[in-house]
Length: 406
Image (tube, rainbow, N blue to C red; front, side):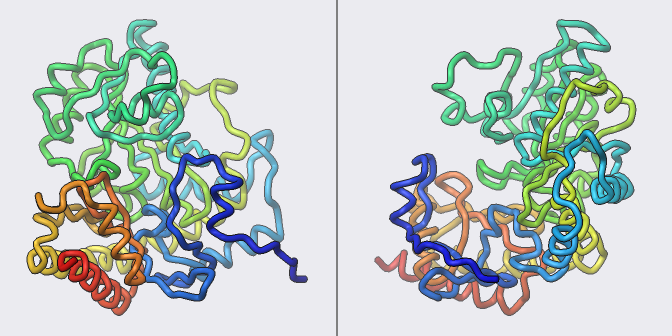
């Protein structure tokens, strides 16, 4: 049975939507693998991945199959009851990580909210009312709820929404001495992104994460890794902490976890999890059967030696060609990141013009991302085919050529 839909176009956005986004001028309507088609039938290559979400591209058969099968069984029962997909997914995440307990929710912000609330509750239970301070980093991003946006180190996102949540300190990223100076026995948690995503794709130094782990141990603080953007194979390991060999107390995951279906997880140990007793935290949709069935299929596909090794091989392919393009056109000075989370740092002549590069790429039929005004970000599917990488980077080179000749 087909349903007749009313015709809509990009101009409708400005009539019906809250103006907190400024979406591109075209509307994608269909995707397959790493290709997307808009309303006019124009084909684009997708190196944006829905902001590191479409980890297996568009309409991957394993995900479509899992969603369809579950959709014909059970959609929602709430957390008054548990469900089989949630339990299977929890087992798979626990078996693949340091974690012993999982909490499911719907977005990265919710996972970080749960992690931060858990850290404050553990501090309260173990040491009383004074142990509630949280240390985060300058230019970090942890979500848009009032709590997580205050923990994020970007005042442009947190200013203008009333009094700030207290007990939060921001220190420069990759600066161990600053962290050492800020941490105390009042600190309940340090929250870090193993790679700062939104502020420019900046990987942590190994010594920094090791030092953070040692400082947290010394001050009985919890180390939280926000792996919303780096998780689920994005770095060539299932989670970035495994690349570094530094184990957090709490890990948050979202974005790629559902491959495009909204789901997030907070992973932690049994000893910490027991502080969230019945009634202390909750969510209506979190852990619903549809989301968990899809996420289960995602982890089954991704957490294999072939796919994870392929991520590193594709990284090398991207990096070599991007460095070549950057040098040839004087467009960027550095290509950084890990796996298939890659940032191209714009040269002085192009500082602040990442949006121009985004627009030029779109005109050539390529979807890319920004990470702040000075970095062009790539977060494609982890199974993007080599032919699509070549074709997409050809388009990117054409965009670079036109942009720099203009």
